[in-house]
Each structure stands twice: as C-alpha cells, then as structure tokens.
Image 1: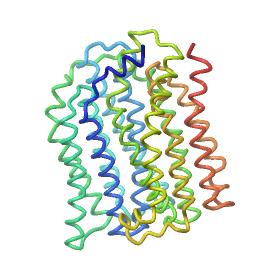
Image 2: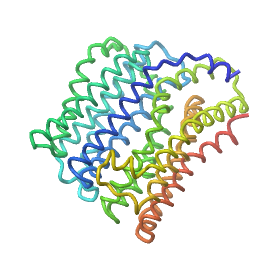
Image 3: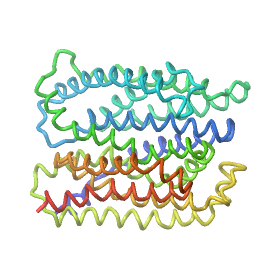
Length: 413
C-alpha cells in the first residue's frame, strides 16, 4: 500500500534543482574562500557555518517542522501567523544567546578576528530568510524559492570575485556582503510572504501545540551540536585549524550526495504525515519504504563515491589547487563513511516526526552528545587524527541508529 502511494507521487524537478543550487553554492563559496584566503580562513568560515547549521536546526525543530506534523491545522493563516510570532520570539532569543556565546568562546573557536555584530546580523537575517522560504515550500511555491536562493548564492559568488578583483577580499568583508545579499532577497519577497499571515489571527492553543511537538526536537538540536561539531572544534583547538580545514574539504567532496535528501526534506514530510493520518501503516510497510529508500540511494551514491575516492587526488587538484591530501587518505575515507552512515537518518527521522514521537530523536542525539562531551577531547589529545576519525564514526552510528531501534522496538507494531 505504502509503496503504491509513493510511486504515484509526482515529484517536481524544481525542489531538487533548488537544493542543488544551495548545496553547490555552499560548496563553491567554500572552495573560493580556500583558494583566495587560505586554509585557516576556510576553517574559520567552516566554524561560522557550524553555528549557522545549529541555528537552522533549532529553527526547524522549534518552528518549521510543526507545519508537517500530524496535528490538525485550524486554518493556514492562523497557523502561519502563530509560527511567525514564534519566529520573532525565536530570533530575539537566538540573538541574545549568540551574543553571549561569541563573547565567551570566540577566542577558543578561532573567530575572534570577525566583528560579532556582523555575525549576529548574518545569523538573524539568514534564518529569517529560511523561515519565509519554508512557508513558500509548504505552499508549493518552488519557483520563488529557487529565485531567492539563486540571488543569494550567485550574488555571493559574484561578490567574492569582485572583492578579489579590487584586492579587498577578506572574510569579514565577505560576511558583510553575504548578509546584505540575504537581506535584499528577503525584502524582495517579503510582501508575498505577508499574504500568508494576518497579524490579528493567532491562537494561543497553537503556541501550546507547537511547544508540545517541538520541545524534544529543540533538545535534540542542541544535543546535535555537541556531536560532530564538537569533534571538529576540538580537532581545530587541539591539533590545528588546518587539519579541520582539510577535513571540511574532504567532507564537502562527500556531501554532494545530500542534494537529493535535503530536497526531499522540502516535499516528503508533508505528504507522509498526511498519509499516516489517512491510513493505518504498519511496521512492515514502514520497513519496506525505508529499505526501498536506502536501496535507491546506494545504487546511485556508491558508484559516485567510489569514483571520487579513487580519483580524489585529481579532483582535489582541480577544485582546491595545491591542497595535498596524499598523507590524509584516512580523513577522506572517514568523511565518506560518516555520510553513508547518516543516510538512514532521513527516512527514519521523517517517520518519527510524522508519528509525533519526537522524544525518540532526542534520545539518540543526547546519547551522541554525551559520548562527544566525555570523550572527544580525550581521544583527539591522546590519539590525534585517528582518535577524531574513530570517534566521529562511532558518534554518527549512535545518533543515526539508536532512534531507529527505539522506534521499531517500542512504538511500531
């Protein structure tokens, strides 16, 4: 039954193209920052991006995922307006916490050479743009989102070449330009966004429903930050930022396969949560879907990953120039393994969120965070890069498969 349902879904190409623009834009920006500014600034930019991913993850957990839950909607305008108020509150809280975080840890994380106000404004406007974009996704307005992302990423790449041409390119100036471009794109479509909300139409019951649904996802997102990100921060602090930059370069090479699944995030949960409400889906049908999902992934991804791995030297010379990874093949292999392990997160987490069993996700991420906090610095200090590789792989196994086991052992019949 579930197989027939999903085979009949008409998935548009535009969401995948949109995600391809985002992934390729992030990839190219990282490459150009490395080529023009060097490995240290590339590592610093990676740390800035860690924080951005944390904020976006919190935003997804606290606000956006509620759009795709199985709770009954009481009119879209009421829902979107309540979510918009939640977004404002969320933004204020984030600005306060990021200010404190940067003040306390900027030196340790290696971002003390950047203006904190610039970073706070960047995080604020970037996640506001993401919220507006998700409203458009939810209403199938993919053409607007693709224009929005094209402006942001194409404009940012153009700004890099312009800054370099006039010999004023630095990470600080680029972050200023990046923030202005995101602000411009946000304002360009803000009137369209306002057509989906009505300031006077909000319900307190929605706030309570959002909190009841999102509280465990918020805790999970906070825990997630102390998983792979904490290992990377300790790698930079205890070994060198250059090694972190090397790992990020390898990880970027492997993570191109996420394009399909990140695009799937925009279209699948809404359809699946509706299907669960309308049908009595059992464990066997869910398992069949997950197996089918993973099989289709591996038959496409494995040949591509093997191609990248065996021709990694030529590919890295083409993309990163003089970056030598000949002595760090284990880092490249580890980045591929981490990506492959985490693949199962997509269908499993979609299923968990659709059933509103979000506490399960927190259990997995908390266990991974506990492992990272207790062992990351010790393993990296004692065993260096090998400790980092082993620890990140074990950590990824914990946060990916523990929720999978809990879901199928305890909740599905």
